[in-house]
Image (cartoon, rainbow, N blue to C red; front, side, top):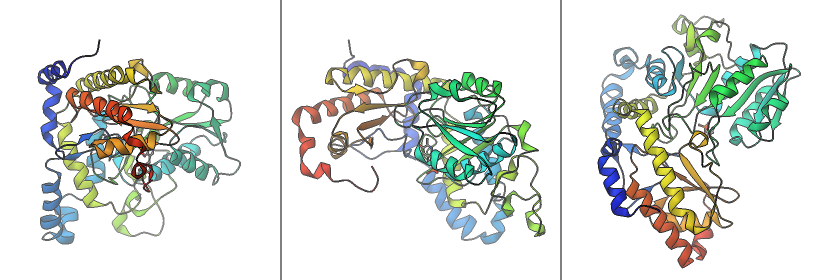
Length: 408
Ligand SMILES: Cc1ncc(COP(=O)(O)O)c(C=O)c1O
């Protein structure tokens, strides 16, 4: 039996995670189920950015590179993200976008396996991962990208020529979560290296990169980490690879002495060699502010609440007869739920018009993200009721809901 709204409210009241909602500014009348695409605005981010603009930039000017600690921020923020993804200090750095970081770590990984030329990636990966993988293999003599029909086909394709495997920890469409420890072990047994894309798990659930002996990982700052639109991304390189790793975008911020202005490239010690150019300070400041929220959050508790929220949503929408492509088993589920509908785009637009914001992934998936930092069980209850209302009324068939924007 599905719970009543009052039962949901009682559970919210008893859940310490629910209090973290006060850390965010959310618009009145909006049920925000898209934190898996763009995280909500933390309450103190605006003041932090204003301070950086007005004081550090406006008053400190170029002195702030030293005086305000700007220069150290990419490594410092990396160390703030590290505990969220199960990494010890000195293995994570914040820079560039996920796409660019994938290019860098994949290039480095291929160079660490010189006799091998195949990179395996999953066919259903977020397309940028495939585009970048093709781009990197195109630059290496004899290298090729082989697409796995699904992650379950990995074992059939792993072989003596496999250099690197690129996989998403949670699938951006279905929300399916892979077993990072088991998959990494199988890749290593074949003598290859693994790159994990953490875009849909960093900040959503506990990730254990060091414990799983992962080689490389990338992820973004604007989804569950709430760093703001286009926030800088992060990358992870296991300490054991750092001394030998050579990334292809060898810019001056990755040089061991950038301010010596020497003509030859000498990589910095450690993770710093994965930096490239001048970091976007305003973006770093917003991400830094959002990471303050994580000082108060316990990822294990968040994960428990997230699973409760997705369980609740799945139970509430079950009577609607929509197919869920999201796994039922907790161990295989990330933090979003995707429901199939042939007119999913229009249904989602009708929901958005009611203030229930999710998104749509072609060809037919309505995606609902459950971010326990700021979502309550009552929100889930109300969102499911709106979905039932939109379907029952047929309002999604209004012409205005079929019009596609550039971003879906
Ligand atoms: C799994 C995954 N990887 C990569 C990206 C894109 O990363 P970026 O645009 O920051 O390069 C996304 C964006 O949604 C994603 O979901």
